[in-house]
Structures are given as structure tokens and as C-alpha cells.
Image (tube, rainbow, N blue to C red; front, side, top):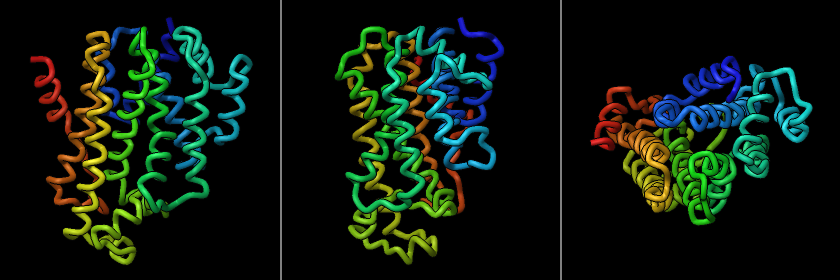
Length: 275
């Protein structure tokens, strides 16, 4: 098993970084649960290296180097944790490089024009996480199960984009595709002035429809998962989809108000899925 101190450090990272992920996956058996925590912790470090470089102890290039030379990497708890999870579940390194390539896009690509461009980004930064997690959650996965996991990751990233519109704008980023904005008559000037109107609501509903399609695709083969893994996947999808519900309740004020799913709402969703 994973060293207890290392396991605790990874657990604290997921609790701090994503309440939804933590609550969804904490029900797994210990080995799978700790593996998810390790994978999340490394992905968090990759993300922080780009979004919060002053607080990150590694640059993205350093993370890439140490991961490539994982057998020799030391100086942080993430390296023995990753060695354990890669060896225990016989994981491929490829999705992690895809994840890093997506985060690297944020260095130079700050706006998106088309949904195709955004889908590529969503695959890199979040669909890749599905590829990382499937071998942990499903012992006998196949290509259609992996593709469903990728779809679920992409759906969650669309939710992140909707929830974080204001925060990303402050970083000089616009992930909402210009073509969708133009389709609904929402201008760049409206965007810059943080206008919340029917056009913006239509833009967000358009993105939500795409997310819902990917959520549906992501859960197509959920019956093939072990019981607790299936429940974790459904909880993760449910918690993320509930963020959109909160956005709607906030009347689509995504610039100055962050949509948060309370623990009470999470408990209600858990009850619905287990009764």
C-alpha cells in the first residue's frame, strides 16, 4: 500500500482543490481511493505550475522532466506516490503528457474561436484525466469504456469553464468560443464589460447542452464498472452537473459570483443515487 504520510498529503490536496472530486471518490476501496488521490494531486501540480507559478514549487518543464525520469525523481512526496500508482495499476504515461500539453496551451492560447478548438483543449486537460482514472476504476476496461471516460472528463471541463468565466477573465483568458458568442449576439464588448443578459444565458445554455451530451456519453457503460466505482463516477458527474444548476439559480452571474455546490446538496445527490 501507499505510505500513510504520502497518502495523507495527496488526500489533503484533493480535499483542498476539489470538494466534488473528494466526496465522489472517497467511497472507493482504499487502494483505488488512494490512487485517485495521487492522480489528482499530480494533475493539480501541473495545473498550478501554469495558473499559479509563483506558488508552485515546480515549473511545468520540471514536472515533465521528473515524470519522464520517474524512477530517479525525488524531493517531493508526489514522486514515490506516482511510482506506486503507476506500478500498482500498470498505467501508461501517455495521458499525463497529454495533460501537460493541454496546460502548456495556456501559455500562449488565451482565447478560443470554435467548439472544435475548445474540444481539443477539453480533451487534453480533462479527457486525459478520464484516461488516467479508468484503469484504476475498471479492471477490464476496453476502448469504448475509455472513450466514455474521456467524454465524462470533457463534460466536467465545460462545467469548469462556465463556473470559472470570471476568474479566467481576470487571467486574460476566454475559453467560451467566439463562434458561439456570435451565434447568440453576445459581443466581445459585452464580454469585456461583464454583461449578463439573455444572449449570455443562451451562450451558457449552448455550452451546457454540449456538456450534457458528453455526460450522457460518459455514463453509457457505467453498468460495466464495479459497484463502488460506478457510484463514484455517477456522483462525480452529478456533483459537476449540479454546478450548472447553481449557475442558473444565480441567474447566470458568472463574472462575479462563483457557483458552489454545498455539502447539503451533495448529500442529497448521494441519497438519490443510493436509494
